[in-house]
Amino acid sequence: EHDNWDFLAGKRRDAAGRRPGDEGYDPRTLQLPRDFLRGGGSKGYKKQTAAMQQWWAVKAANMDTVLFFKVGKFYELFHMDADVGMRELDLIYMKGEKAHSGFPETAYGRMAEKLVARGYRVARVEQTETPEGLKERLKKDKRGLKVVNRELISMLSQGTRTHCYLDDPEAVLHGGRRLLLSITERVRDGDAAGDDEVRTEY
Image (tube, rainbow, N blue to C red):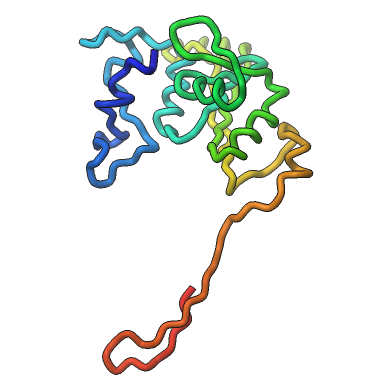
């Protein structure tokens, strides 16, 4: 499905409306068409479910990142992220029009480590509300999304890799060292007229 959306390819814009090639274009963000989430419009988009509206809210701000999106006891990958999951993690597409794959929450550490080791950034989107909490919230405000709240709670990359109880213990033991910062020293003679001072720059 996502392969047919022009706003992801030829007519792509960043969050500020800039096109590829424009000064300041930010490929990490995406501007969604006005009618995309609610459906309809000249393109005849299908209305996105409440959960997919949550997914797009995070994805549109993190297009360079693979989202592990929590649904019950599973992490699910959608659209272009599902393509990465199939290619890099040997996941299988689920039935349906949109690319969709997933894995049990217990495999989070192993799956995240594989992608990070291959140069991907991984974002974990967790459910931060229980079904009971959702019912109570909707009693007070019926206008909100009728789905449990979800939030981006962590972002992993090769430079920021940390380990917690969800992570693969083997990665802790055999992860090796990763470069976070490098400092070089350069000695320069004075570069202004009459400037004989020798400077050390870092």
